[in-house]
Image 1 (cartoon, protein in one colour):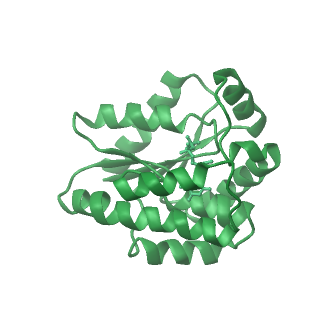
Image 2 (cartoon, rainbow, N blue to C red; image 1 turned 60 degrees about the vertical axis):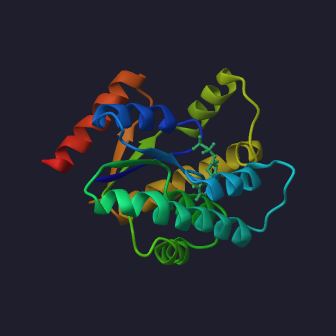
Image 3 (tube, rainbow, N blue to C red; image 1 turned 45 degrees about the horizontal axis):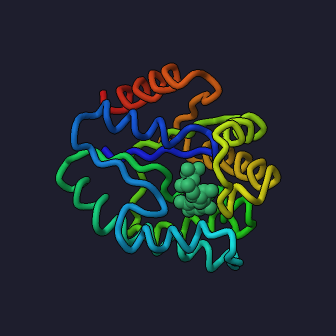
Length: 200
Ligand code: TYD
């Protein structure tokens, strides 16, 4: 099964993606977006660089380029072999950030992602829902430097959170919303319950 985790910056996705991959068994691939391949990690450096000014469409196409490579090298082969793959962000991130928050259009971006992935969408998407103010406090507590997206501040995160709500209501069968304000163990238990429910 191909499972993606989504949420605003600071929602705890990365921790939960790791724990889920471990729970699914040793060797379960965990990939992150943008990245997960040699070419994708190079594109990631470009995309996260706070020194760089990127046009929203150029930004979207770079995310899609990294994703096309990831699908081709990792996700599709694993999935065709009947294995699990856990992905820390996938096409829904482009729809929420570039489509909704940057205003390129939800349907338009969904269409472009469809093209980039050859129509591949996750079997299950777990959306970690967290209030943007709480997420910002978590990022501040970690004390690391903000990347190009986090550096844009609250307004972007608020729009992204709103975008995710719209996406969840467009795809209620694929996307499960999880309350990410709880402690990490409880969130992990909710993640496992949803994965178990879909497998059954
Ligand atoms: P990352 O460090 O992976 O953020 P996080 O740990 O919060 O997942 O950085 C990726 C950033 O890129 C993040 O701010 C979200 C953004 N992003 C998009 O804008 N569009 C996309 O399609 C993807 C995959 C990520």
